[in-house]
Length: 231
Image (cartoon, rainbow, N blue to C red):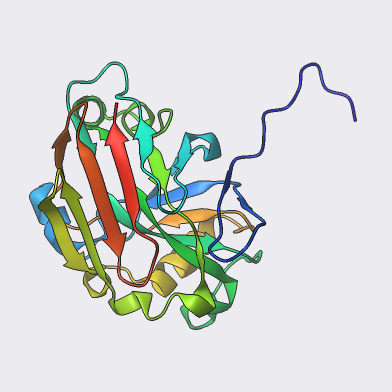
């Protein structure tokens, strides 16, 4: 196979306990999937889940025991953090029943859905897509993937984020409006899920702005924590 220019390197994440890396295909994100976060964004109730995407090359891989460096993005003065549990898909499937969802999960990781909130809000006002607010370069710092068999009970795990050592977000995964299995059921009705897909499952309340120099440290109980500095 010949190309008109060299293809980009495959985006990937490290895997806990393995030398092989997890190649990335697509990054699906679930919007407003914690009740208290939905309220702080001006919404209530259990609305049907909705999704947006980030390109695989928007992922900023962060190795275990290191602090990733995320450049402060252009065009914004209101960059927000959103800590999330990330689900890594390891098997292809369409129209997956919630009861069968676990067999399609390769593992789990801790991620940040970084958001140019001012640009997102402006797009909302105009009824336009959010991509400029959500899908920019390095907008998804994500730590190593823990294989599902080693991850413990993530469905009931605590999730948290500190900025410069102070709590910003703290909740637990039981507070998801649509749990992991239900999310996979809904998502796979719209797209055929493929190995290498990631699902960012939503963020709890407490989202807020960060600036250059801030240190973001977050985690989900049982998974490798995530550390990112804004530069």
